[in-house]
Structures are given as C-alpha cells and as structure tokens.
Amino acid sequence: MTPEGKILEIVKRRHVDFFGALPCDRNKKLYDAVLAGFRSVELSREEEGVGICAGALMAGARPAMLIQNSGLGNMINALASMSKLYSFALPIFMSWRGMESETIVAQKWMGEYVPKIMKSMDIPYHEIRSLDDIDQIDETLDSVYENNTIRGYLMEPAVWKGSDFEPDSSPATPAFKELDNFDGTMPEPKLTRFELLEKISEALEGKAVACNLGIPCKELYKVCHQPSNFYMLGSMGMVTPVALGMALCSDKKVISIDGDGSMLMNPSTLATIARTAPENLTVLCVDNGAYGSTGNQLTATATWSDLAKVARGFGINNVVRTADPDEVASALGGGDGPLFIHAICKAGNANVPNLTLTPEEIRKSVEEFLREPYES
Image (cartoon, rainbow, N blue to C red; front, side):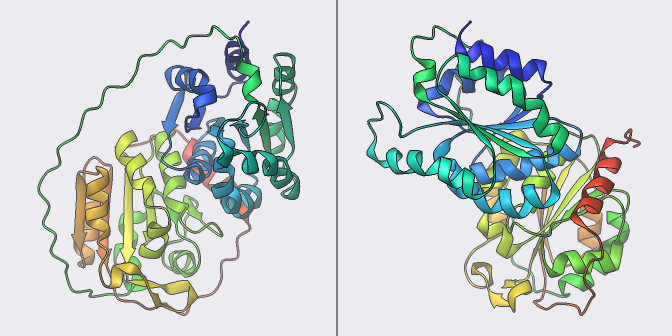
C-alpha cells in the first residue's frame, strides 16, 4: 500500500469526515485526495482552519487539518486560547519541511523549531518518517476525539519517496465570478454596538450566534443570552471562522457577530466564505472604527479601509451596508447567504457585567443546539 493510501484508509476507518487544508509541494497528492474524498475546506490561512474545525466539531463533525509545518506559526494563539481553552479536538497532519534533502533554506529553521514549539505547548506529536511509522496515526487518532485534545503528525517528505499513488481528482479550472454593482455610500452611524444589539435581539433568537471576544460578548450576554450563543473568550479574529465551520456542518442558520478590529486581523476568511458559499451563514460586521475592548483606539476603518468593499472584492456577492437597525434586522431574517452585513455604529461600550459561563458550558450548550434536528 502507498503511504497516501494508508493514511486515507486510517482516517476513513477512524471516521474523520472533515478537513481544513492548505497544500504543500511535498504532499500534494495526499492533499488532492483529501479534497476529492472528504468534505473539506481549502483554507486561505492556517489559523482560520483552527476556528473552522472548532465550529465543525461543535456541529457534529470529526475534523482534522492538513497543512505545511510552516503554518504552525500563525496557529499558535488560536490553538492556545481557543482549542485548548474549549477542549476542541484537533489532529493536525503536517508536511515536515526543512528536514532531509530540503533545498529551500527558508524551510530549515521552521523544520527544526516545530517539534520544540509542539513540546512547549504540551501538544503531543509523532514523527512519521516511514511507511511503518504511519501506524502511529492508527494507534492514536481515536484518542484525540475521545479526550478532546490536539495532536500533531509530522510527516517527513521521505515518507512519500517512490510512491506511485495517484489521487482520483483533476486540476481545478479557474472561473472568475462577476459581482453585482454595489453602492459604496457610507452612512452616518446612529447607534453604539450595544444599542444595535438591543434593537436586533429578536432577529437573533433561535439562531446559532458566534460573538466576538471581549465587550461584544458581554453585551450580547446581557441583551440576548440563549443556549445557541457561542461566546468567544479568546483568539481575536477567529469568531467568523468558527461560525463558518458551524454553517458548513449544520443546517441551522448561523450568524457571526464580528467587529472591524477583529475582521482586519483575519480578512482572508471572507475569501474562504466566498469559496465555500454556505447559504446559512451571515456575517454581521459591527464597524465602529475602534478597538472597543482595549480603550476605543481607532482602527483602519475609521479613516480609509472599507470592509464592505473588502468582502465584495473577496467574492461575497450579497453585501448590505447600513446604520439602520431595522435594516440590519430585516437582512438577518432575509434570504440565502452567504450574507455580509456591514453595520456602521458609533464607538463606545456599555457597562455590563462579565459572563458567568465556563468555556465547557459554552461549548456543550452550542453543541446541543447545533446537533438537534433542524426545524425551519
């Protein structure tokens, strides 16, 4: 059996059914086979895959990631402040560059540091250097989901030497998507984020709502707490990836309440949303031009950056920009997504108490909601 075939047989037998993936030249055949044989997301950035897999897990999937080891660097905070915090299971299959016969000098440092990074984060890992070493995947993969842990599988390029594996897939054909015209007029803000949430709370009821960390979470908890709310307690920039994972693996309507500061940290997820196009996903981007939770320092949207046009440029066709809460509520109850609502608000925070929920309580509550049979 080829190494690629052996890995695919193991992950299928262990009921992995969802992948977040980015390609590497050394394991491109495995990558193509994963895309062809599994429900999968072609990621724009590795970090977002951590969030997408978390959302998929809560919706009932058994997710995994397939990446190049260089991507571990931009995943560290999300793994620590989200995956570990909420005990999200995540096996990570990494092409281990920088090792034997590496010709790209830039790969060598990260190849050396990856095991040290994994050790420093108390993430167990396995060095897959031969066909026999692949048995370690079979022996440990179930435990990742049983114990809600993270585990790494470092696959050295030597593993693939001499393999005649050919994936059952064909190269993608580019097909540029034309977008409708968009009125780029910027309205004057009328309400603060808290006031907007008060006005639209009825439109949020009964939906899976993933809310950005810090004060937005506290404000939502005050205005519209419900079992289906996922409150992000860490990982700035990751709430929309989590919502995307929920939407891709559930029939429930999913709303991401994100902010301009957070969206600027991970805008590439908008490209992934356009690419995967889940009809049940709405991103409500509350843009007040400020980092509210750290003291209302100005963000780039306060003066020159336009997130509605960014969303359009990434390929999301259904974009609404408004400062009117009635229009926001109407859009939330509207038709097919993916939908990006650019809600223009005033800066400012409400004086609301902290959440009294633990990460485990938040996760279990959302899981129960997402895994219930869908009722339209």
